[in-house]
Length: 441
Image 1 (tube, rainbow, N blue to C red):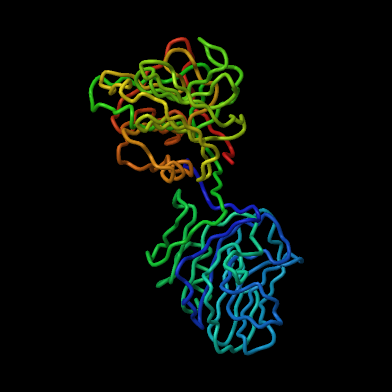
Image 2 (image 1 turned 180 degrees about the vertical axis):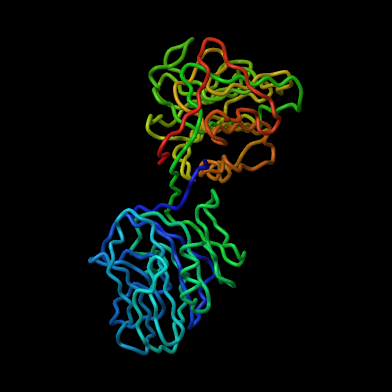
């Protein structure tokens, strides 16, 4: 069983395929695989055109649905006073994934639904050229902001600079045999990133307000028990320039752990220096001891129904706390009065604990992944990791990496992905158990 992802819209975002302003073939094929969640007038599937009124004269192509739950495939050149449309009434929002294809060979428009030819329209136009980028899930407003946003889930988008045959479209839909020489073909569920590269390598697509949808998430359930990883050898860690990250959720912030009420430990690496945990004030916290006093930083409020990426960063005399998710930083707080000279290097042997602060503050919640870096991460790197980047994080300075969604139940790999060290169960707690949750968001 694998984690299945695709791109999800909620009526306010789109994908922009960069550097396609000059891609204006007179013969073309556009294909997309979608799961519409709402039918409403002018919800766009894809477009290389403007949303200006038809009477104003526009040129290009676009696909949308309208009030009678039909698929529209429009083309127009500005020498005409009417648009040209293939229109096919169908129940788009029946909960099924739909394969839509439109072709134009310079003489005839053809609209296919689920691999079958549904409508044709004979028309000859002289040009479809415009200076807009292709938008997936929207249409250009003329000011490059997009409009008519699609609502649902998007799996694939492809384009050819020729009209595909009936046989090619049937095979693409039913056997997923991609016809030769695509100009571009994007699989939006194949990466955990804000930027996608199509299979030809020629084009990149950028998310603008969209989000990935995870159908199943598999993590580790902690209920007053944690994992302890012992490192008897290895490199030293500069604790004045390190980063700790925990991805998960605190299910009951007020419950706390065994030794102290109200604290849920998430991650702690070697000694009472830099930790990330849920604190008694109902916020996340990272803290350090610099030889004179504890220097905590708190921010963000754990939501039992939401997964967070919690990040503690030490940078000289500064200590930062970031709470992030979905590729953006929600909150950020810091202090700059840490005495760096009082924070010694961390030399083996030491312990790293997941689901605890290491001395009894056991987590009641879930951990999907945890990471420890021997350097200060940038805000951009933190944003990337929070947007499923924990599955493929930056490797520079990564010294410990724990990921708990790798395999099916009974085969969970709980080892450190960098060193191979296996964990032991922490005392005063129960063995963490594997879970399958649906959905993540």
